[in-house]
Image (tube, rainbow, N blue to C red; front, side, top):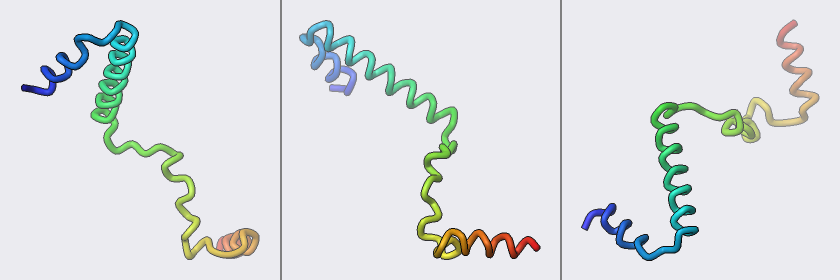
Amino acid sequence: MTTTEKLYKTVQDLPEPILAELLDFAEFLRRKMLNEQIHPNDELLVDLAGGLENSVAFAGEPLAIQKQLRDEWH
């Protein structure tokens, strides 16, 4: 039995409100899959957040780091 057949058999006796919810979820998964196919390697800005907390270059006091960076430009 295929997955499609198993799914059909499972949902046959479900009430209409549950079927509507299931359809909504299936449409969400389809949109998500299509979006991943269109933009497979896009990174969100939020994915980059916190990426420097363990960096050796940015360890220490923020003001000292800022002064060091300023001094490098002069």
